[in-house]
Length: 478
Ligand SMILES: *Cc1c(COP(=O)(O)O)cnc(C)c1O
Image 1 (cartoon, rainbow, N blue to C red):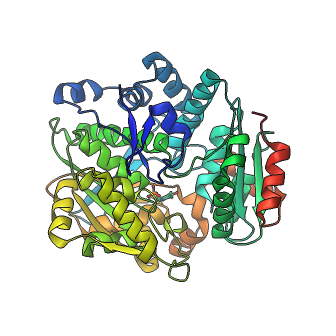
Image 2: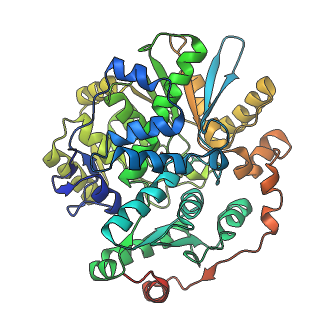
């Protein structure tokens, strides 16, 4: 049986409890007590599985309270060709010069064209399952600046026992993102538009979630980037990508592979680190940030410093615009020997003075054991990389993916294959792609008219009372 604990010490329960709870009651993040170890013989068995079957195997390593057949049905329902196209996750060669080639792992073929669909689709079905067993309802409350909100809505529409209340800022989102999100018409999906910024939305969500009585009464839950269900579902594609690359390269099982991850809240790359901890032969995990280089700074200097609002830049890879990395606590917990007291002390320090520093010898050890290497990319780098990839391959990549490929090229390693994760499709960020290439990438036929679709949303005041009132009227009765 796999039990869950908080990084600051509290006991939590099992996978289904970790799914529904956000933070631990002590403010820490939820993690399994141990990670399963995947031996070579098991890797070999997994290497020929299709995506839904591999997802069943990997997720069951974290979910001992789920019946394997049940999990298999959930994965088969989530990872359909209809939802994600043939193969679910694809792989391509990308030439960077005559001597340099990387692989691109296509994670963005889902309904909202970003990698978040992969975890969110399975999360919707996991929730539905747990809720029906417990006879409970869930009202998901969240804030989005674009990708998370629509991925959540497309995953939770038509799910029994679940409603979604998603706050988005009145300006800021791209026309495509707005059209995508506000054209979900299902009765259980509520788009609440708030005057202000993403942070205004985020603060409202926090205030309501901190009202424990209200939270309990309306069974408020979340699907934000610290949700353990999302992290565990993302572990799958590191295994899947690894196997596909070995096939392409005709390499023996256990040969090392490096992954390159465009990073914001450290969720995606944390999943890669967990895959490595389970025994997947990952040589390096290359972390790419944009101008918001909180994480690059940490891996270069050992200083983890949360940025103020003024120091958080709005960039052309907006889904990586973060002032702190929500999942980082899980990583630090693991690489410093899973010491709850020490983790708590570091985050207390962060709360009190806005930063902490890891000793340089310790940092060296962390980098060696985790394989993490970091770099950052700026507007000019991503624009040039979009151009270069197009010129050499006739392939259009999105700005976030371009950040990853740029940092990969800066840290190019010809001793092992490098796999860059494609975190969104270029259609989602047409303006930046147009700036780089002078044209807008071809869209799937189903998306041609998306801007013309009717938009369904409700504007509310940016006040806690207004939000609570709306939820009181529209929440699923519990
Ligand atoms: C969310 C997102 C990221 C960042 O992922 P994290 O898990 O937060 O590190 C990168 N690119 C795109 C397109 C995203 O939507």
